Length: 503
Length: 96
Image 1: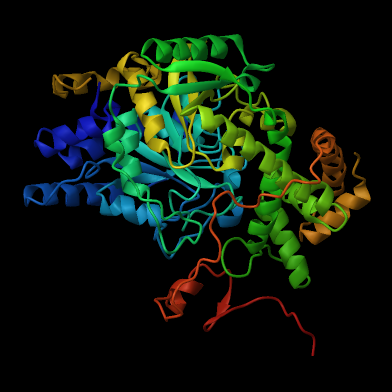
Image 2: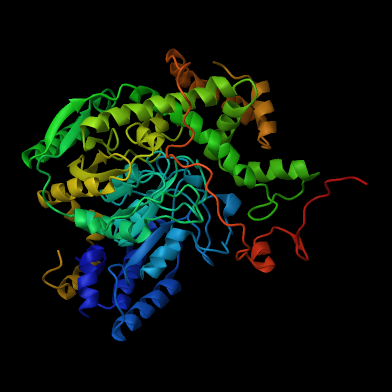
């Protein structure tokens, strides 16, 4: 194992004791990128010089006796829809291909302040619209466990980078499952925090009432550490919550005795693959053996969630994406007859087919004559879906479901049929509609591919989810497995350098 | 639910989006199929249900009306496709 297969908390031990410098850690990641990025393609931009500068600054801070935080000197990837001052932020779209933001997102500032070192900007489905990372203007990311398969989406680059050792942790964004589903497909931990828990300032808006930023990590401890750095109220995001933020590492106790878990039967119906069902069921048995009470329950409006989501999200997107008009930033088409023609050509040439499809769907749902039948109807059904969860949380501390109905599918498999692609988010979408926190952890392998377990909690109960995930990690070794791709000859020499306590 | 090519063209106009003839045909079929799937919502009675646009009980978040920091003009204009002085340059909008 090399330095790039360790977790942030393992690296922190090596760094703070002087056994590994931040520069060595950074260089190991750059070498890994050099070796496998051509096959994985997790990044839109690699910020090599910036990484080495940040690592050198971390080393200097340590040598001069400054207080070292748990993320100081740790290489991180940021999804390319979260703005980074001076570093191109493209949303994997032609329309923002050369956009260099003049400011940082709040989460980026917070992670820089915590000592995190930017490796690069991670690939994604264009404007976060997709479930496979195939809708990127720059080409698809490949799943590190099997490069013939998708990494999931939309935060596929973030998930793949962490799985492949091209970053220790990453940020993604989750509007309908875009953190959890790729985390599941790539075998890493992914958390969508409660709506409002993390500032959206500087996150390029897709569907503002659903979007939330969250971390990808190699284990639950790292997830708690990154949450500690990014959560909390931000005056620059009026929808951010003023709820106090606990120290999430306090949830890392291997005791779940007496916790009440609900298993909603609607998540185990048609479309769920046998392999995923078996892995999820054995994780549920394990949780019961550890002392949790497990009971089947029902969220009766689940079957309406997909339709509700695919009205609300595109409607919000059609409004949010109206700003891309070729006037103030981004791509502008040439040869327009007048300014309306400039808008139309710019948006036609600048957006890819899936983004255009969703803008069209959303514009239709909001247009005169259809607003009540589609958009307003969807908002009402959203209320019913929220109530299902409220009722369930009267009785349960958390709900347990699969993260996705299958393991990662093949590249191209669903590309021609938008509806079948949309169905791969069926287990994650209801959570966004209700603004709940949810965690995906690896609970097994099927066809050699990781299977994700989803834990859903009431608003602001991220700690409960971490505790459950941590307990599972204590009795399984799934989080220690690394994709075969990362175990090439080239890394053998690093094994000799790895200290004994490194796993 | 089927969406005609004419409706697709109308919606594209609203969204300020050019489309090729082929794409109009394709979108008409795809959007029809997607909206068919959404017809299931109609079976739910929702007359007495309040809509949810936002999940948290936050309303009217105010701040003090004081002058804060803003981007300097050069930073704000740095990504402009075309600029003249401190302005974004666009094709002529109003004919004299």
